[in-house]
Length: 395
Image (cartoon, rainbow, N blue to C red; front, top):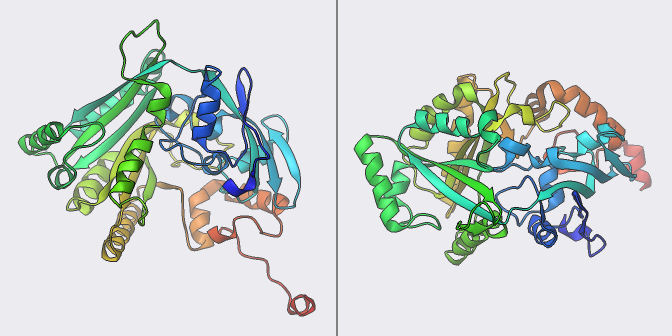
C-alpha cells in the first residue's frame, strides 16, 4: 500500500474531515491534523499502519466502544475497483461500493483516498490501569465503563489486558507502564487470591487545558505510545520474528467460558513473548451494512480477544500455531460463535462460514466490482477464473 502513493497524495485537513492517501501512515495523519487542533476519533493501537490497510479490515482500538471501528468514521472514499474504474463513493453515493470497500479485505478495490471524520483534539490525556484478580469484576467494570451512561461523561479509551500467572513470574520484570516492584506486587496478588491471571483495565480520559491542570501525557504521545514498546522489542531482537496472532470477536455470553477454558487452561502453561487483549465493544456501533463481521448475536456487547504472541524459534512457532488451532477447535466444539478479526482461511467454505448471512451479497459485489477475480487473490476467498486452454495457447 505504501508504494501506491509515491508522493501523489497530500494530507489535506479541513474543519471536520481530513483527506489522506490510502498509502499514508496513521501517524502521519495524526501529526498533520494536530497542527490544526484536530484529530480523527478512532484509532488502532499501532500507528505505523497504512490508512488504506486498516480501513480494508475495520480498524479497532480503545475508542471503538464510543465511536465504532475506524470504518464507521469515514465520510467518503476514492476506490480503484477490479474493473480498473476510479470511483468516488459515500453513504449517499454508490453506497454499495462504499460499504464493500470498508472492511472488504481489498476484495473489491483499492482505497486510494478516504475522507476521515475529525473532532477537536484534546490537549492532554490521563492514562490509568486498574488491576483485578477476579475476572467477573473485571468484565463488570469494563462493561460499566463503555455503557451509554458512562459514555456521556466517562473515559474516551477503554481496553483490557490479561497477564497469565506464568507470565507474571517468568516474564519481563518491568514494562513501559509497570515497574519491577509493580510486577512483583501483581504476582503476589495472583498468588494470594489463587487467580490464574491478573486482568487490567487500561483507560484514558481526554482533557483540555482548562479541565485538568496536571495530567499524564499529550494526545500525540498517548496515541503513538507503542512506538516506544516497538523500539524496546527491536533492540531485544524480538520484533522481526514470526507473529502467529489470533484475534477473535467473542460473544459476551461466552467470554467467561473462553477465559476459563482457553486463557487459563489451553494457554495456562505458556510464557511467550507478547500480550493478551480482552475488551468489550458495543454491538450497535457495527452496522449491518459493513462488510466486516461481528458475532451473530443479539447481545449489546461482544469482546475482542487478541492472542498477540511472538515466536522466537521454529519450535515455538509450531507450538503457538498448534495452540491457536486448539483454541479454534474448542470454540467450534463448544458452540462459541466467534468471528475472526484479520481472518485467514484456506478454503472458500471457511470464508462462507466467516461471512455467514453476508456471503450472498459479498459474492454479488465481487462479480460487479471485480469480475475477473484479480483483487487480493492470495486470500482465496473466491476461486481464480479458469482460463481455457485455447486462450492460453494464443498468449
